[in-house]
Length: 189
Image: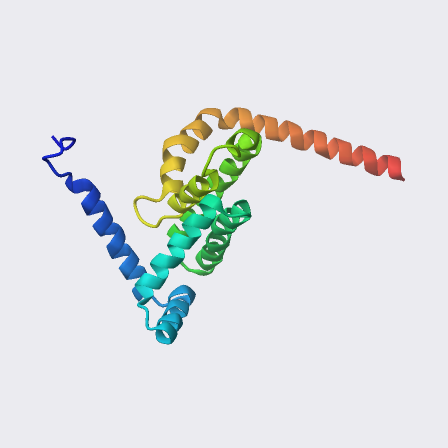
């Protein structure tokens, strides 16, 4: 089988080839990152794929050992998705809106879970590298989009099972909030 030393496993090699091809396609696109890499390539003579790989390696090391890894991880999980969300809003297509709205639902749920488990998770080594990898997984384009997978396999079934109770609780809370606001307004007069 695949686990023996004499038999090679084709899956990891194929996965690496797929990643390498995606990486090369990304470097061929026109965007701010590839333009900056092109300018650096022109100045240094180092191919932009090596510059990009080096930048990714430094970013990974910083996430593992650097001060402020939490901020960097949150910037990675917020800045590009926010930019892509604005582009999706401005595009005529509905599919990209759904993809990024789903990302934000997963991001918000992850943030809520993280808030309550932060005291425990903070002590795990390489937590922020794992969190960053998770957020990148959630924004991966195509069929392996982590946010869509999590939404359809976990969040949606839970929502469909409990949405009536959630709607009722939200209705009661909004009614109480309106009553409280009316009472405060009455008392202020």
